[in-house]
Length: 83
Image 1 (tube, one colour):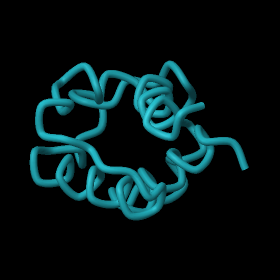
Image 2 (tube, rainbow, N blue to C red):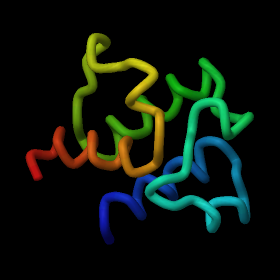
Image 3 (cartoon, one colour):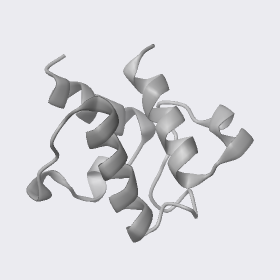
């Protein structure tokens, strides 16, 4: 399964998006567009990304741009995986 698909599923599960997961595309905006993605949910998503992809995300890597789009978040994960 492609990284972006795994990220979409992770977002859907973590944020409880239900059927709305099917509307997520690479250019789908995250912060400010998905009400469920608040500051607490950002922490939950980061924790889940670290666990599911076996990566470490440092505090200085976390900023608003990381959560601009689904594709951007997926690209960040791929970079952390060395792809």
